Image (cartoon, rainbow, N blue to C red):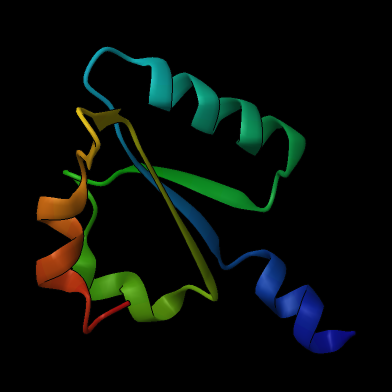
Length: 79
């Protein structure tokens, strides 16, 4: 139980949005789960990633491609 309580503050949702829809969906998730902190993936300080227990990444897909993939791949070893 203690580990769960400590981890509740350590959840993040990184999102990349082009027109605002992904940010809106991320906001809805955060409303339902207050332990989730939201960050725009383009502005996130990747030096702090080890401070988080759970990481969720939201991105639109365009023509079968995950738009945030160019950000995710170089950071894969950190994830």
